[in-house]
Every structure is written in structure tokens, then in C-alpha cells.
Image (cartoon, helix red, strand yellow):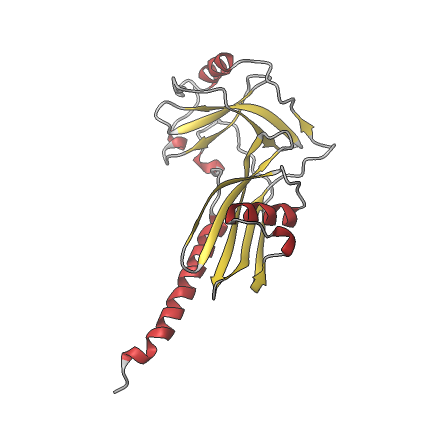
Length: 233
């Protein structure tokens, strides 16, 4: 009878490839922004920029113009070069690695340094024989050009007024007493980008996006599964 030990290297390779494939499927489907069906009834429909998905050929090297001294900066440079963005238009959220792969999660910045909150990207690398190769890129970014109606970066209403407007529009939402005046951009349909206050709910279950110029509630995010059970009244 043949010894099982002869087949252990082959079994390990099969297991590693299966694990990498599962991880790539996970990263391709992950998103930093929640789907519309998780929002409450009558809450503003969230807008998510058009997504792209790219799978690189096997053993695709990282382009020389994207190589940096560390994984974080390399990931940022890859996204910048693949999407044609400037050096100050991509930010890094987080990343992690395994024995066979590396993953990075990123977001879009405007040139003034303000994050566009409903943009996101993820990048996958394959590690083989001490070398790192590009594997997948998934991104939902927007094109910011002269045709875009971009809100001014300085708010015209203060955070307390934004919270008051939020409580009137969404009566079940109780803003956290620790809410800070965090300002971000929020891309909407029709090439509009609003400047918004990101206001967390008490208990950190949800957050709302309130326009920092009009006090209109333009969107929100969900960190639990019961968001749609609540409704506006």
C-alpha cells in the first residue's frame, strides 16, 4: 500500500489554492458601504459609485512605478496608477496578510484631503516563493472633474444644528453624546458631492450623514442587521 506521506505536499497545495480562492471571493464581495435594503423605510436611498472588478493574470508582477518601501504605500500606489488618480486621492483603511496572500482596503480622497465616504476599494496580492504578485482589484470610486457639483469644504451650519435637524427627520435616531464634528464628502447621483457631518447613533449601531450646508439627511450607514426594522415617523 502506498504511503499517504507521499501525497501530503500535493494535498497541501490543493488546500492552499482553495483557501486563496475563497479569500479572493470574499474580498471581491466586501464593501465599506452598506446595501440599500439594510436602510430603514423612507430613509434616503444610499448611492454607491459604479464598481469595477479586475483579475490579473497569474504571476502578474507589481508595476515598477507602484513599488514602494512597504505594503501600505505599494497598495495605495497600485490603486492610484490603475485608476488614474493623483498621489493625494487614495487613502488606506486597513490590511492583513496570510502565508499565501495579502489584502488591502482603501478609499478615495478629494485633493483637499477630505474622504469621500461612500467610496471603497480592495486589493489582493498572491505570495509565491518569496515574490508578491497582483491578483485582484475591486473599486467603487468616482471621477471628480469640472462637471461635478462639489460642495465647499467649509460647513455653513454647525454640528448641533445638524443633530437637531437629524432628530426631527429621523425621530428614532438618538445621536451619540460623544459625536464629534467629523466632516466627509458623500457622493450622490447626478454628479453631486455633498459635504456631510458623520453622526453616530448612541450605542454605535448606525450613523447618519447630514449635509453640512443644508442640514438635509442625505444618507446613512448600518453596523447591525435590524436597521430596516426601524422607520421614519
